[in-house]
Amino acid sequence: MTANAQSWLDLPDDTGFGLGNLPYGVFSDASGRRRTGVGIGDFVLDLHAVTGDDVHATGSLNAFMARGPEAWQALRTELTTWLTDAAHREKVEPRLLARTDVTMHLPIEVADYVDFYSSQHHAENLGRMFRPDSPPLTPNWKHLPIGYHGRSGTVQVSGTPVVRPAGQRKVPSDDAPTFGPSQRLDIEAEIGFVVGTPSELGRPVPLGDFADHVFGVCLVNDWSARDLQAWEYVPLGPFLGKSFLTSVSPWVVPLAAFGEARVNPPARDPKPLPYLDDTDGEPWGLDIAIEVRLNGELISCPPFDLMYWTPAQQLAHMTVNGASLRTGDLFASGTVSGPRSDQRGSFIELSWGGKEPLELSDGSTRTFLEDGDVVTLTATAPGAGGSRISLGEVTGRIEPATMP
Ligand SMILES: O=C(O)/C=C/C(=O)CC(=O)CC(=O)O
Ligand SMILES: [Ca+2]
Ligand SMILES: [Mg+2]
Image (cartoon, rainbow, N blue to C red; front, top):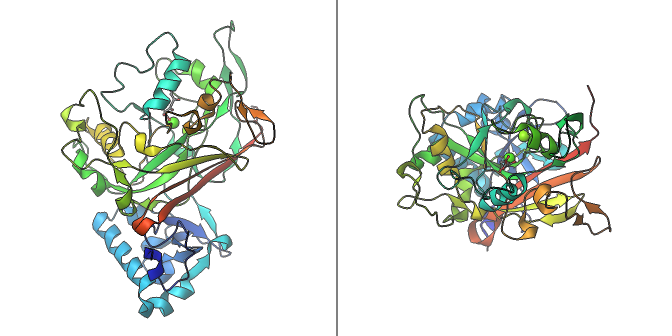
């Protein structure tokens, strides 16, 4: 008997949206009003209607997230009671809407957006391609989680069209850069972490405070234009090659749902400095299995449990200089890649820089994305009683470039 059998609601046996998940999102129905909902089975529960709390009518999760971990846990406990105790059925059932009847929106007002680079396999692959004459990992890589600040205003919800960016491109053999649509448009399959509780300027957030600040987890596709990136990134890092669009899943899965998914991260050698050393604490490796589909076909299964740096280490590093957190901050893991070729989280890796085109089941091949392509990321993690919790999906269709 799985945990889901306890609900009075008829939940499909294999639903990823069972009682162990209870993800938050922002939806609208025919009225157009945006409000907070909780995903359960094939339904979304209208939280504003069922609680009467205006925090759930603001059109983003931020005001609720700002209330902090006790409020998050209290509502999660109430939701579980409402959905399991038949005494609440009369109150709750009329507030359920079919998920197919609602439109999902960007769930958070994104404050600051940071993107890390914490998969050793991804970093080594990119290092080999971008810097063939140097060791694959830069000398700092195993001492700190490398990251950069991205563009929060272009973080958008799943389904937002991906307009091919145009920009400057130059390969080493060209004499001068040219301008035009990116010819190396790519994805980056990542997991995102959403900050609820802010922190004070000047006070680092230690490893052990991770769960006091991080509200939940989403899927991220950090669309990337490799030709723009390769020409612009020296010496300050990614800029226009990654700032045109970052897509996130509409559901934010509470950190509390990942109890069964906690795993030890890979051994870290050399031992990190004390503020990053999680060996005596509670490490935050997470067993999340990602799937990448191109036009419906499964092309890769990146394993999040192999990430070298955990989200708790990323948060500790991001604030160790005293930088403060704001409600709605989003930090992404970095592209998730495993050691196998069918575990790579980007096309630049899957096609090895375009040299080894990916063969698709219809006989066609792909190096980078073409106009009309649809890329969909999904992910699941172990839940209670052998169930799996779903992070939903993040999808996007490539549209032709708009030239200035
Ligand atoms: O190694 C490089 O120069 C570039 C690396 C990336 O493009 C990866 C990136 O944006 C961070 C990540 O998603 O892992
Ligand atoms: Ca990225
Ligand atoms: Mg981006």
